[in-house]
Length: 181
Picture: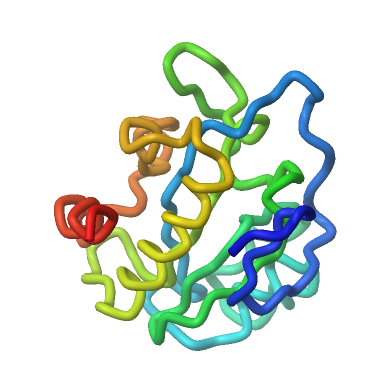
């Protein structure tokens, strides 16, 4: 369930400083699926949490140098074991989509919810992740009925040429099947 503040009841809430108010005219009507791992291909680290809370030590790995000063967040992260962490309440604007467009409307952060799956563009996702994502999506669609099947997209769909996630490892057919079960 989602409470009036936009918090998912089964998620661990870890507050990110990287969010702000949505425009008053923005209706939440898009769900964006992302993937993330830090460093790339390494799972179950604290680096994602540290990135989304502004505490990432960019000297911890050579691949982190480009993350210095980055202010980014997502509403939720689903770990490989299916555990879900929420960083920004759904009612607020998380900074997950960057330069983006959906159906000709720029700035998808204004009207979307962003969920990160711990993974890479080419890795398979776990059964636990699909189950948690489907459960969370059902709650999101109940609370935000404008998010229909046609308004669930990958980051690659709203930022083509710039982003490729959730990648070839994500099984859209299976995920959508779980939503109908």
